[in-house]
Each structure stands twice: as C-alpha cells, then as structure tokens.
Length: 157
Image 1 (spheres, rainbow, N blue to C red):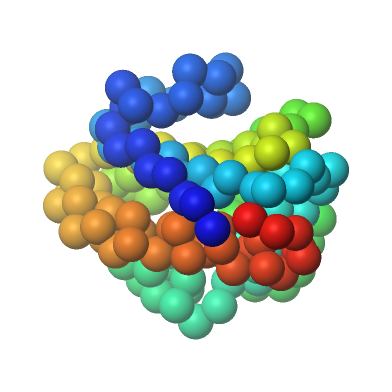
Image 2: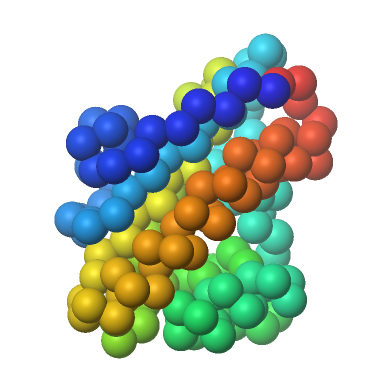
C-alpha cells in the first residue's frame, strides 16, 4: 500500500489548517492512497488506526512519556483515550495536552485516501526535548498504523 509522508509545517496539506487553530512547532502528515473508493466516516478510520481504548504501548507513550490524560474505557467522545474535540463530514480531530505540549491528531478522508496529521505545539522547552526523539518513532510507526487500519476496515490499498 502506498503511504506518502509530509514532514514539517510548510508541507502539511493546506485544508488541514481549517480544522485546527493550533500553530504547531512540529507537524507531519501520512496519507494512504486507496485503490477503491470508500465511504467510511473519518471517526471509523480513527478508531481503526488507534483503537477505542489505549493499549499498553499507547499508555506508555501518551501518559507516561508525554503526560497526557487518557480515559480508560470505550466512549463515543474519545478514541484511544483522547477526547474528540472537533469533527466534520470527512475529518475528526483528537486533542490532548500536558504542561509541556499540546497535540492535535487529525484523521481526514476524501474517499480515495486517508490521512493522519500530527501537530505538536511546545508549551515549554521540555516538550521539544521529549517530542523530538518520540517523533522519530512516531514517523516510523504511522505508515504501519494506516496500513493496518486499511486491512481492519477491509478495503484495498
């Protein structure tokens, strides 16, 4: 499956900026291109990418390392413990924050592709110190998360 990456705030698709007010220090966007048209809502894709509740690895990264609050059980207002704070017909935005960072995860679909955009704002220098090495791990894992979601939903990439 073809997954493209855009790294850096200047590289993010222009339409993403209408879905957030965050002006991040760090940004990346991964897009999986599909060989068939899809009609699944963005929230369905976000749940396929991240799951309904945070797994052990997500808890370690999001809660232990990034210090984000996570909800434990399944909920229609959260995905993997992250609050859903915005949504439209073709997108959903998750948001979490700590004393040192604010992060938006935006899942966006246009019927022929699905994108995951991660925007991170550093409130304190500690945020950059923690996120910069984690972003390298995130950027290695994100394409696989999208490919796994395509398989889980049962469409062809």
